[in-house]
Length: 296
Image 1: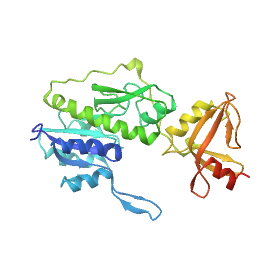
Image 2 (image 1 turned 90 degrees about the vertical axis):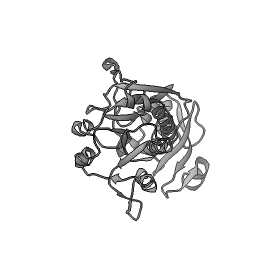
Image 3 (image 1 turned 180 degrees about the vertical axis):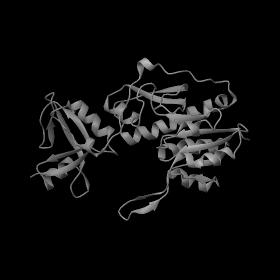
């Protein structure tokens, strides 16, 4: 039995989106369309690849819209009628107000931080990099401002200090899907009303680029360096030159004493001790194997 008679349009693109879409389908919500980015070329062969949520939508016979500009779908949305809501999870494009206004009660957004902390594109990476003790997920009403809309509800998630970027993405995707399903009936029937964010507590996070991959140990502590390794594990990764070789660090720990030739002195006089890396060959290996093969 459907939880509501409302039609729902789902906006999303990557694996984070996939968990939310799956939960909505399993909960028997009336998903009438999935909006995602156009197919893109990837891999060595540059083959055209469809987003994960598109695959799931097609498997469940849900129409898929892949606009180059979001406003291209405005006419399609109008044909759905007034009784249409929308849910967004990691879509990857800014939604103009003209599109948001076509839905009632607007677009419901899953954001993986405790807003107003970490408005922006990298809240998960920022929580790891900054050594936060907790993070969470916010269900909010989307506005044209960057993650500035009012909040329907939040869930706190305690951090262990060992999470990696991909692990925390998957965890918060599950947390976000759970709180969405819990809150959605009340949001759609109007019994849950959003509350404005505290603008005095806003913190922004920035988009990462390839230059952020390069480790600068003379500018940061060993603890910060270790958190960067975990927080940048998928992108932009953590690179450094060792004995004439550029490597990608995939696992490391902090040490107070120098133990191997792969220990990197940081500006607090502690060491980032590399446990695992990707060698110039592209092969992942232990620090010991790298030392034996490259650093002798």
